[in-house]
Image (cartoon, rainbow, N blue to C red; front, side, top):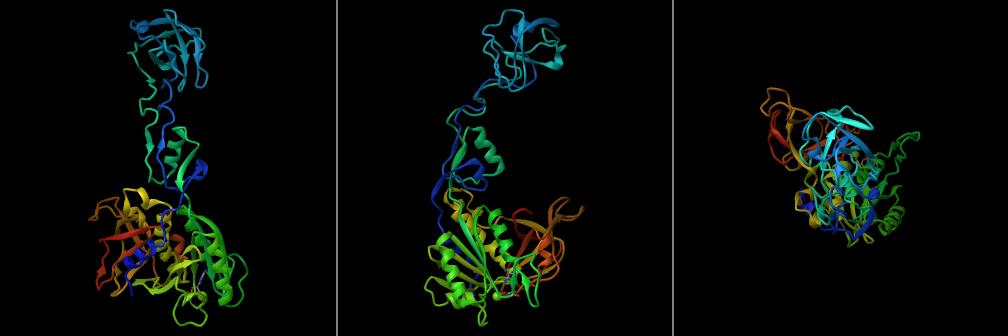
Length: 415
Ligand code: AMP
Ligand code: MG
């Protein structure tokens, strides 16, 4: 058996970052920047008011109260027409409005009587008050987001504010998902005797999307060697990464993935020292990277999380320029166990768990992240996936990890 780390290294060697492409912002969420986003203008782009109020010359409000003539208005998007400001006058200005060059301070409306033709100003204003200066955050051309960062909603907002309608990112990996098994029917269809809904197909497709991949096919093949071989060949020609579930265990006569691919120089069948997820297929089909996961739903989701997702992220460019190389692996963190978990002697154990908070007065302190293992270790126990936020990762060993101890967890997207 190979260790999880050894298999992950083999998996990651299957995929390099895909070529850079320029995409509209609306398609860029979750993509990794292949080139920095730079500010097209100074940020902010122009001198603007931070308040609703009156644009004045500070000298005119040095002695208060004072009444000024209101000669023009500058709401956001409609600069004042007035080109010069006579002494004793001001312009009404609203938040985001362009500050005219003759104005050197803004008095908030709350510090006035709010008049429209004349206004009584009650409080003096120092030069610069409530004016957001052009370029006070960044000059034009400055890097707003460095290459290598994954675009989050915050990043999309920053890129838009910097004037970018498009961004240059590593192409989103195209992923095909294939479920195998004669017993499977599409979720929601009536079940005949001995039939089961295909849960891996929809689940893995959602996981791929959540991780930033583009799902190009979600298919099912019966336990028929020729059908599986033909489907894999076709999927291999349209995807960057093909994932299959089921049909990889040794020895069963109905394991069509093994029957179709064993003997291919491009695919290996290996046993990985983990539970669940021990039988794995790895290699290439056509020009695509290929991972074959075992069919039990928990096994397939653990396999995706531990191997598939890091490969997808690496193909999506996370490793290419990111200083955070750990981000190539699954996002992992540490949490406090809420119940005992027994390690397995030879295998790394992945236990489904729900996130919660450590109790007050516990050793980890109030509010620390805690995990409640979900009952049942059977990899067929699909119901518990409904409240699974993460997998607890228990290295091989003999010990019991006791409630209150810290453990490594691997988070699922959306938890
Ligand atoms: P296999 O790896 O093909 O031997 O499948 C192992 C177990 O997982 C069997 O009980 C299958 O019925 C079940 N299984 C396989 N594929 C799926 C799937 N796509 N959705 C739900 N259960 C599955
Ligand atoms: Mg099967």
